[in-house]
Image 1 (cartoon, helix red, strand yellow):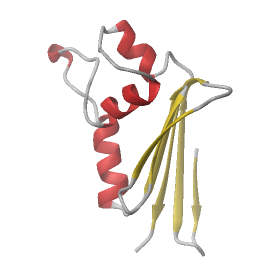
Image 2 (cartoon, rainbow, N blue to C red; image 1 turned 135 degrees about the horizontal axis):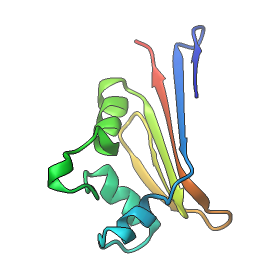
Image 3 (cartoon, helix red, strand yellow; image 1 turned 90 degrees about the vertical axis):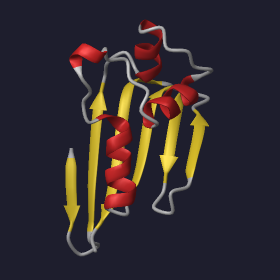
Length: 114
């Protein structure tokens, strides 16, 4: 989903994938991680479950770079029992969801106009 607020100069984008989660994909690909927050952090830093032959997609690392550095926005990623919250000042916070983990992955970006 996407929504533009012209008076505020804000563009919101939300993407929901009800798949196996980032931690679930890492587990299936035998990628080591401590907990769901660590899996999200690794994915945001560029760790991929794709093989060399398949190439790489845009990925979370590139989306984060575009949203935060390129468009001075913020980005939230929720997957399983973990969440990453990154604000326009490039401060990152990783939070464990104590109740109601998400069965899938939700990516939310708020982009600010110039």
